[in-house]
Image 1 (cartoon, helix red, strand yellow):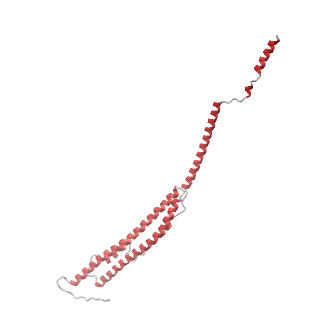
Image 2 (spheres, one colour):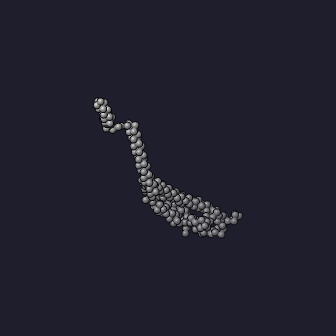
Length: 242
């Protein structure tokens, strides 16, 4: 009777005793893989957020550069050289560039024809003044040409500075400002070219007008020499030397 009791006790103890494998850590491959993927996704999200912050910071830096003003101004230099050429035109002697004054002087010195009331001495004075006007116009043209050459040397220096500023521009605003100054240089040169063209055209116009006026004077002198046209000759005193 004791043996069954011992057997039952042994079975109970065996059932209650922990198994040797129960003390080992259980490894679940699927759970491990899921945790690794979750950690990888989290790390990727963090990296994306960091990259986004870096992009936003760089965007702010670029905006700051684009808004930075160019610390360079060539406008005053261009105005100075252009003002020099303008001064030469304003100082030009002879017929005024003012329209109202020019009309009066031109009508007096370059008539289509001379009336009988105009004396020979007045004709001589007019011819002398026309020659002076042509000479002054040519002198003004030559002076403006010489000044344009001096301005061209200055413009070369301004152009080099503008190109250097454009190449080193840190942002869009500086690049645009450099471009605007380059356009200002081109506009200044165009204005100077117009000034030179005006003086040249003025000299040519006065030369042609002088030829027309001299022809009108010659016709009047021939008419007076011939007299009334009835074949009569009216002697007049002629002065060869003054």
